[in-house]
Each structure stands twice: as structure tokens, then as C-alpha cells.
Length: 269
Image 1 (cartoon, one colour):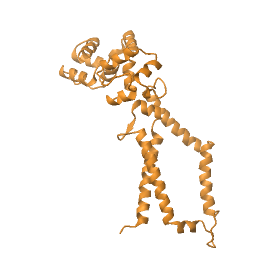
Image 2 (tube, one colour; image 1 turned 90 degrees about the vertical axis):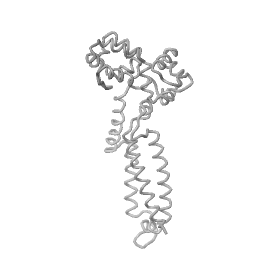
Image 3 (cartoon, helix red, strand yellow; image 1 turned 30 degrees about the vertical axis):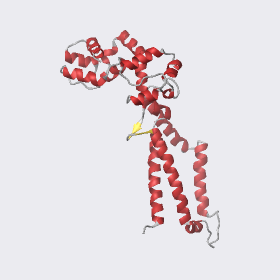
Image 4 (spheres, one colour; image 1 turned 30 degrees about the horizontal axis):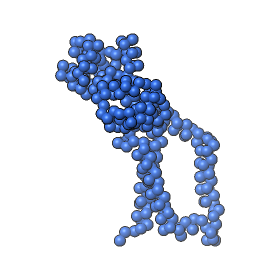
């Protein structure tokens, strides 16, 4: 026969551990707009899933605590009693516990030291994620349909569809959101935006000839060719390139000009 008190205590402990873990992850994770735009994940879970886990385990923890209080109400009564064993809410221990909780409450709300340093530290962590990725053209752009996205970015719808189709993406329709199209093709909304925005990038490349310095991964996005197929073609021609190999490096290994290699990779798609 199992012990109900032991079961409740273990349930509370496990729920607390999960809440703590998901809380730490959410503390360190990027802001929602960055997480959604880049398909941020950790250990196979995205930010929405970590948030959902945190909320549901919070409910489990609260339910467990209610049972714990019910099963241990005598001990709780003792904690709230004076030396004469009479109920007294304002015992020294209760006042101390209340004072610490109020300190955390008002310290957080009014940004007192050292709470302000801790909260600033969290802000700096989340801001650091934004520096690593290109920002969305507007808030929650991934939730817009392709038609809405074109309208809000003053882009030509036909040109956008043409670029996405050239990259052999599936299910490209005006009624689908950017996030849906990205998910169906195993990409992030940010990667789709790189493909859509390739024209402006290509113009810059032509002006300064900087395409030779691009890695194959960067070139595949800007020039709209499939990276895996490009690596296979280069490998078959005698050079074991990686996604981080530059166009110039690969071209020199194959004894061709960078522009010739780039044209070859684009035509082979």
C-alpha cells in the first residue's frame, strides 16, 4: 500500500524541478519575436513548448500543494501558532517570511537594487539573441500570409513566388502564412526572408564582386540554389567542400573562376 503523503511530496518535487528547468530556459531564451522568426529551439523544443510546459507544470505544482496543505494542516497550524499553542497569524516566522516576499515583490516592481541588476542581466541576454540574427521587417511578420507580407513590405507578389519556386519550395500560395510555408519546407521564416530579399543582396554582390567571399551556404540563400545538391556537384568534381567553404576557395580547387562556378551551381538546380 502506497503512502499518499509520500506520493504528493514526490509529485510536488518533480513538478518543482520541471518548473525550475523550464523557468531557467525561458529566462535565457530569446524574445518571442526572435524565437518565432528564427525557429529557435533547444533540445528539440521551441519557446512556445517550453512556455506551455512551464504553465502546465505550474498547475500540477499548485494542485499538489493544495493536497500537501490538506494532508499537513496540523503542522501548518503549529507553524501559525504562538508558544501557548494558540492560532496567531503574525508569528515571528510568518512576519519574516512575509517580509522577504514583500521585498521581492516591491523590489521587482520598483526596480530596486539588486533586483534591477538581475532584471537588466536578463534583458542583456535576450538582447544578445537579436544581435545574432536579422530582424523581421515588422512585428510578427511570420504570421502574415504571403500576400499580406508582400503588401506590407512593398514587394511584388509574383517576384516573391518566383524566388521561392526557384528554390524548389513546396506549397507556396498567397493564402498561407510565412511561418506555414517555412515549416512545411523545414526552414525558418528568417531563411525564407533571405530568399525573398535575395535580389537586393545580389545587386550589392554584382557591384563589389563580393560573391567570391561568400560561403556556399550564404551563396545558396542569396543565389537561390539548393545547398546539398551544390555540395554534391562540387564533390563529384573533386573537391570535398563544406557549407562553410567559400565560392573562391571551391572555384580555385576546381580550377575555374568563381563566377563560372556560381553559374554552374545555379544552372544545375
